[in-house]
Length: 86
Image (tube, rainbow, N blue to C red; front, side, top):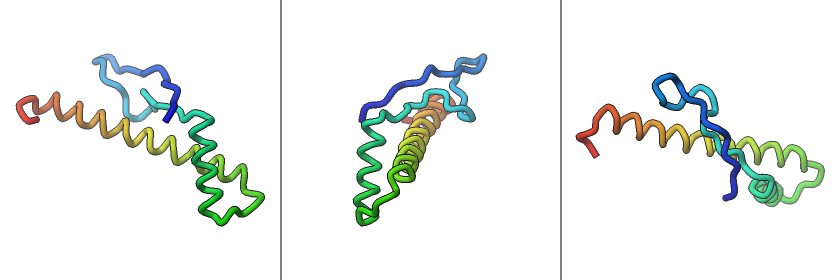
């Protein structure tokens, strides 16, 4: 999946903020197009839903990206808090 990386936003302690999309990977138009086409296929190729499929695909991909970011940050936070546990 091709994605553009957005510049991280750091707190004064150097940790990324979870409230703002700090290190969000913005989905590329190719990724959005592919997901939108799958949504089109899943809806039985219903015409007239191009924009709504595009927007839904964009929303899904952003959500997945933010979810992956949150998981990675949570793992890092736990490693910092509990360095003796792998």
